[in-house]
Length: 467
Image 1 (cartoon, rainbow, N blue to C red):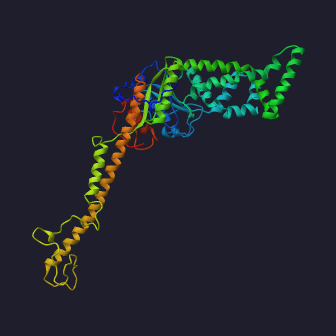
Image 2 (image 1 turned 120 degrees about the horizontal axis):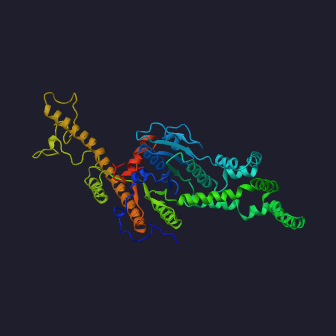
């Protein structure tokens, strides 16, 4: 049964009591050869993987980042025109003597490379041109995750880089990444495949005659279900791939052991939101059940405030006071203001002109008596007071609005803190680092460095705006 950090009532353990993930120590350790960034979709795995790779390279390591992100944001942020199945070196790395390479998984090309490497030329051509293989390699469920692990195994076997950072596929569930290699390996080595290959493996006419009767019945049913041409394509594919099926299972098992090895470190990436941390908790438990080495949790896009000492309650009270004072809601921009003729001892209703009794807004005109500067001065003062009131009104409204926005931000921070505390209460053994949100999107190396600084600071960096 999976724990739900959003529903767990014990929130007494705060994030400050959790162990802090030391990212730089992890990246600097020469024994760390693979870092796998995993988590649910939309939490920033690609950016985190790129930032980790850049930071490790600028601290002296030779790094390759393998991304599965089809949006190609990694290439743009690293100043590369495009990424493909071949590692490309990233320029403009600052000092340290390290190198950074980046690549984006080409699922079909990786599958093609496996076929070309494990089959003779004639059989490889038959497989690559087979319609069923083309569909399988381009979009079969689980193929992307499996090929990501195949590519990881290839990179590790070359021993060309001393650190490989993997950005896992944007799956609906983070667990697909762990399950897919075995699922695809089981399919290619499964009962249906073996059954389709059986006629070629049974010797003797009697055996073949008996089996062909059963096969004819089965293929007739499958032909009606799948279509005759598709079934023939599958059988041709199976016959051509016969010698390779065991290899898929063997490599899947080898990759699984590689993920369990001490030189591998898993980083679960999550945002401080209910659903993302629920998925993170599930993944943490699954990694532990499979003996996968978990380094810690990266809590991404954490909001902060430069005025945290002003609580939401105080901010809302101040905004309400501005409203109640009448400054914001006053009519005609004149309430509560005194002009020069309203000084103590003078009546505000006193006429300012014998020609306009009771009027306080007599303008200077040709009808005003010459040599009567007091009336003109009073009129000018009244106009100045009205203008001042008009100028003050937007400032007060803006202040009240900003106070309410600050209150909303502080309420958001409180919700995030409660969600983090619930996760920490459930998994106190998991080391955590926070990444405060940047004011905008990451689109260059400078942005990746800023993320790397926040990863290493564990949330102690400068406050940032909303993501």
